[in-house]
Length: 355
Ligand code: AN7
Image (cartoon, rainbow, N blue to C red):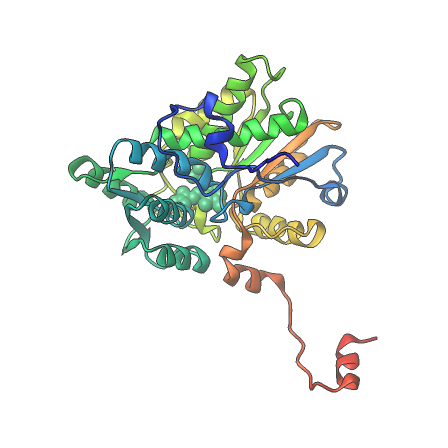
């Protein structure tokens, strides 16, 4: 048998990434995530299209952040950095802490106190990060870490670090390779707007190389209570149950608008009810537990379809950015499930089963 050991996205796509043969690659074998056809969902929402879900929750730390973090930490290591820092609504901190551990670096994370899903916090704790919870939101935390990284010898690994975008663009490469071309529509949650920027860069690069024939329409969705780009102004007190995208001043705001305008797409918003509906639908119709923020892509698809913005017969990809296990509180709260307790007697169990 021929050896075929997948060793992460830098090794797979090194010709498209800013690395050399001597770059010390820091990897947890991220990327190569499943692209799952969602026929039950298409039927349920009455859409005559091929829908695919890119399940980024199967990355090593459970979110798409690993794609950017392998690049950012690899380049930090190449430059001799001893410490990294980020602001985070949760997933970036989990990913930074994991890659920081792998690289033997110290990791500092600033988080908004009380607004981090339990799984994400427990990950950063276990990977050994220095965790600082501020009385403030993500936007304020990001301002602080930018300032700190300019004055002290710690490398910033938020998506304002261009190597993050380079790593994350590989998600677009994987989609194009799986489908044999770019999809027609690309639905994606928007928080700090790094990921929509990265995917668009990936699609543009494959088009320029002649590997694909067109760009997908980039369909970005913010949470209504944090919809700075849609509303055209910074939101000072962003609010949404999707804490991962509770961001009121996206760092890649202009790049997201560029992706929208060059691709003929939209940036719109979905409200918390629509997010919860999509979150539940994904689990119950497709067997996929994504986190609430991730469900914004599917909620966006449902909204766009209702608005008549989706042409039938097209190929659609929705990015599911993070694993639902990161946020067990939301899963338990919104599932509506009541666990039935009985004795261990067969008759009692059958009674509970109602058969
Ligand atoms: C699951 O972890 O900003 O638009 O600090 O965790 O690229 O910001 C997370 C963002 C979507 C939004 N889905 O992506 C952080 C952080 C999930 C996320 C987004 C995030 P961007």
